[in-house]
Image (cartoon, rainbow, N blue to C red; front, side):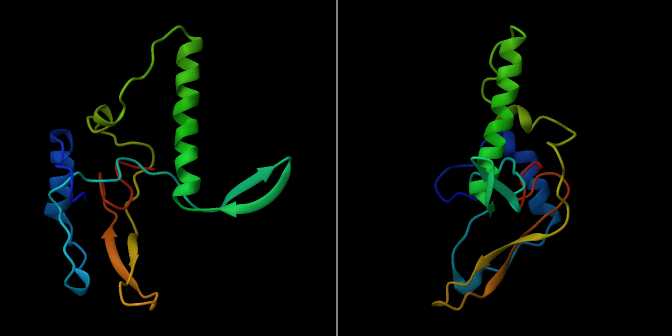
Length: 144
C-alpha cells in the first residue's frame, strides 16, 4: 500500500473487501505501514522458473519481478498487435477496467502469502506478509 498516493475510487470496493475479511500481517519492529493508500499490485505474473534462452541456448532460470514484468508486457503487446491486425484501435488505459471484471483476471491466487526480510541487521529472517485471498489481494492483485 502506498504511503504517497491515495487509493483511487475504482480500487475501493475490492480492497476494502480484502481488509474486512483478512488478518493483516503484524507491524514488524514497530514500523509504520498504511492500508489507506494506493493498493498494489493490480495484477501479477508467475515469477519463478523462467527459462532464459539466448542464441538458442539455455542461460539460466529467471525469477521475480524481472521475469514476470516482461511476460505481462509481452502478453499485452501481442493483444495490441492482434487488435491492430484486425483494424481495431488500441486498448487504452487497462487498469481501471480490470477492476470492473467480476470474474477476476487470469488465475485467482487464493493460497499462500508474501514474505518480507527482517529489518534486523543481516539476519535474513523472513517475516510473514500479506495473505492471498479470493479476489484482489496484496499478494497477487486481481490475478496472475
